[in-house]
Length: 626
Image 1 (cartoon, helix red, strand yellow):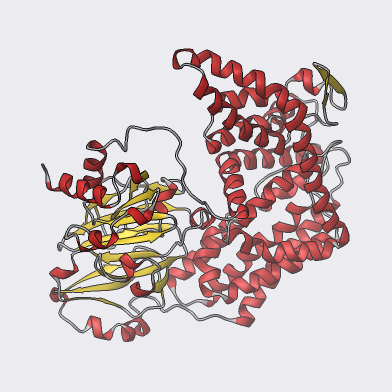
Image 2: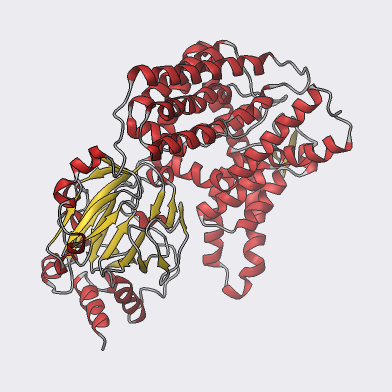
């Protein structure tokens, strides 16, 4: 019996045996059990086991910390137990409050095709602009073909929603798509506003039928997930390939048209009327709140809750319009104004370059580099941008600017503020004025409020801060550069006692402001978790460095992580290893703090930090003293 198999069997016995385990996964350092009864686990004996570093109870999980060879122990655990044999759904425990669950559901459903929808919305807006400027006619072949793809995604939106909702609710995607196709079938659409009879029961078809609708299909797929599981349990396996789809169709089609569809339509109407009531009370206040707080909503993942409202506004009967998107444009562009001011004010060359590039990206609606890389770490520029966004949003609300197509909030959104029928450009002009106001206010306020400029690595200020570390002989230490841009946090402040206790090694933690992980030294990728949340590198000098992006992020199963290297790759200091979505990690309810630890710290005299507050990737930030 191998050593890893021995460890696996001991751990399984001490957590209460197979019968006490609902599920088990592993991350870079630990086995994560979900136990039926944690009181049955012998925690004291596990903590005393020489091959177990520590036991942690967190987030409904019973975590047994093994170390960097945890994957080998996990393989033995699954190979010599029945834990990997049951593919049935198991209770995964609580996932947060209802609000967080709703945000998670909305983001999971809309994220996969948001780029396609934004692109189609921009194209639709530019087609309207082309007709308004007499570059095209609505009867021309160019217009008809391009309008078909620009408008098609919105007309048949329930089909896309069905597919992504089915993945979220873990039901058959193709059955869900068939259900959505029934909702937007021409025979149903042609009867908009009428009432049918199904075996004596009324089937009410809304005024705009179900094209472009959002809530009905999401509710229907959610119900389908339970109906499908029910039939899979009662229908023999050799009949399931035909009989399960047939049974789902026979149940879900009438249930959707008779009950779920009308209920979803009513809920959508109530949601839309609720927003209309707030907007109707004071468009100025609505604009100020949305323009001022939009980036805050984005930071906490709350912005996803507004996406269905914008779509519901646009899908209203009789050709809907949306007043929310125009109020958000100043919030986006004001971040660019603040970043441009930082570009002119900072003496840090790296920050200057980041500020200029992020100003450009914000113009095209991508604010993550601007917010997390420039304005938010400097604090006062972020406040200046929020103030600018509030003023600009209030002006646009006062001007009653309306949006006619869905798309990414950016300067490319402006053509979408022109109505297709009247070609009135007054809304576009007002939106431009409001956006310029926001941009200028953010730019000027950043100059007035000022900010604490970051000293550049290698500058005199930086050298003074690092005197103790830099005075030594270079051959007596290994210098690691920061793998991430962000704010330094002492390791003992990390809300995970395995890292904070130093059990995995000495080091430091970073609160990322940019979702990119770089190599801290030349070396080889010796640990790379498939989910991308943890990377280990052995430097050319023999230091073993573990970088763990966020806490409990293994639970995201790779969602929001893009791996750019493979295990065994040779890398140079500064090579990009992983891209990660900070907003998605936060929306999933996980801290983004990223520990960087030297797991073989015991082989060295000490591991020293550079006494920094903020750090840019590539700056010296840890010294391993030999």
